[in-house]
Amino acid sequence: MIAPLALLAAAAIAPSPTVDTPVLARMVEKGEMLSAADFTSAPLSPATARGATAVRDAAGREATRRLAAGSPVRASDIAAPSVIRRGEAVTIALISGALRITAGGRALGDAGKGEPVRVINLSTNRTIDAVADRPGQVRVMAQ
Image: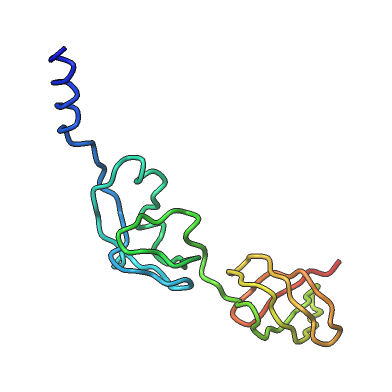
């Protein structure tokens, strides 16, 4: 009977395995751009470290929510930097060959370069599906 108790005691004392994982060195607010300087390394349990994004993959990306210091960054926590912000005035450009038509609009969501975004055409008050092109400009394709 004593042997099983000794095994349990030894198992309770043995340190659990850890993995050096990139974690945030400071709190990062939603919309803030991450850089390599925002990261440090910390020993975490394999379960906690699972899915952590490498520093090289996170640098230059934008936080999609507030991220706590000491936590690993996951793919769902970051996105491409937004060039269009919700509520922002935008220029809607329709380009077909040499033809270019523009109109004023308002963005209904955030979008990174090349990502889809819905906008309202202020002239017609219609909602349009567009693609973020650069800051303040979206494009629609001729049909």
